[in-house]
Each structure stands twice: as structure tokens, then as C-alpha cells.
Amino acid sequence: MAYYEEVEIGNISVFKNGVRVYVNTVFIKTNYRGNGFGYQLYKFALEQHGCLSTLYFSASDDAKRVWKKLIKKYRYQTDFFKETLTIFID
Image (cartoon, rainbow, N blue to C red; front, side, top):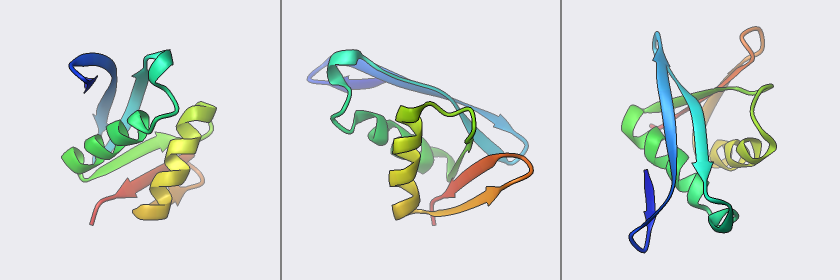
């Protein structure tokens, strides 16, 4: 869960499938969106697990914006046939 000034503003859930950790859902309350909180949730999960994956054709437009920011900072790998994008923390 994510908190801002002691108010719960969102959360992220992930699941492990083999060696990959996939982002399942990310939620940020509407009035807190656009302030980088989603990015911070992804970054926290990445630091906790060492890698994060997504099925990039099913990601929302908001999620795609976050993934585009993450690939600028972290090493990543795509798998065309599995439609996955994986980001690694090194």
C-alpha cells in the first residue's frame, strides 16, 4: 500500500510465475494520479523483487507511461513471442 501524509492512496500487487514477477494491478486514487506515485510503487516492487514483468499488450495506457519511464533508468528485456517486458535492477 502507498501512503501520502498518512492517507492510503494506492497499492500494487504482483505475482510470481517461474522466475518472473509480474505486475498484476496498480491502483492510485484519482485525486493523487499524475504525481509520480504509481512510478514509485513500481520502483518499490522492482527493488523488492529484483525484476518486474508485464504483458505489454494488455497494459493500460497509464501503466505503459510508467513502463516507458522505467526502461529509461533500468536494464530491460523484451520477449516478442511471450509479449513480455521485463525490467531488472542491477
